Length: 248
Image (cartoon, rainbow, N blue to C red):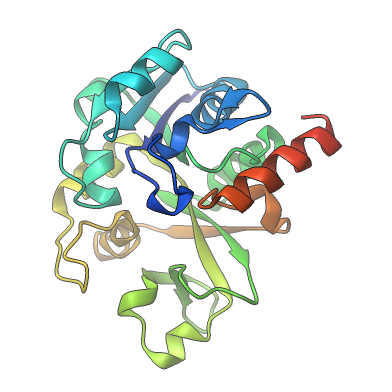
């Protein structure tokens, strides 16, 4: 992205109960390296000069494991949703003017070239916020991308809040975004929690942007494996096999 700084916020506060382990999800090793480290190195690869990791469960252990990677750690003491998580990083980016990437600490297979394409798409589209999406046949628990007839993103609806019609949508939210820094940290402060989970969903920034008169965009990736979240021991084993096979 020309003449604009890039920062990154990595969401890494979750416990990861489906991992069936006492270890925080993002500390589980893939090919001998803590899962979170892959997202940190990805942020560096695409040129982020300020990286904040939002941590919560076993925060001190996460600091110890990844503290030498040049990350600024911020703690989400209460797990109130993804929007609330990003809000915790607002002070870190108070003087920052540029693009902020939202990455997930449990998505270790994402490639730098894909994120570079996301940024290029965002830049070319003139959007204030762009969400990375993927089309899935089995999209049970993911947020759906609701678009109008012109293909414009209207909103993202979480699976638990979706109507039967919305649940049939195949295009889903990967949890990865890029957004104008000033807009992002203003928007996350305006998110409400009037949903089934009573959480502050980061997905709501798409609707907030549209209400403010801004353009929003979706960037569809073709490779679902790249954006898979690691949620179970089976996912972890698959990611390790994939990395060994691809030599990444």
